Image (cartoon, rainbow, N blue to C red; front, top):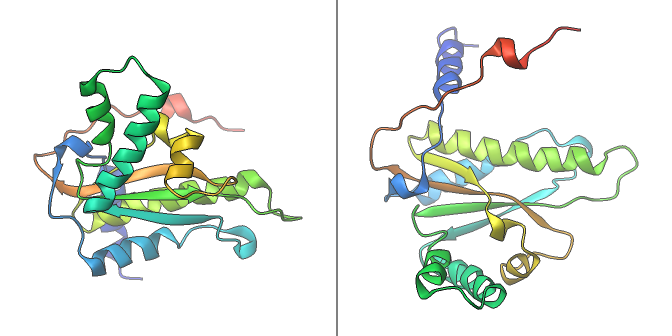
Length: 192
């Protein structure tokens, strides 16, 4: 282990923060950087080697096609919605140049409960955020109503047993990012 790599890594993790998608521009990650991000996303705790997650990459026109799915479901469920509201739904994945959906599913296993498999998908999403940030991009893990809507999930090609753990928006920050208040350790830690 390199002595100066540990403090650098710890400082990076202590200062990592999310960037709002509306504060991202292009360029997004190159194909090689995307491969690195997804490789890191797949290196998470995974008891039983089940790989209970997969990735959907939305970039270019794919973001707009996904927005059409979201907007069509929204319009169908909200017939009173204004054109502006429907247009807003169409743009859900358009701010950042790259969006990665982490799809979570569980497999029946005698030793690995569904909850652990779901946590593995969450760890994958966080690794994607961390890898993108380490490469110098802004990243944000979001969901939204459409991440939980079965009609949207069907329209995005998920199977009946799959869910979205998160949409990770990745791009170049358009302005310096401000930190938000973090909880004091004394408020979130106890000793047993």
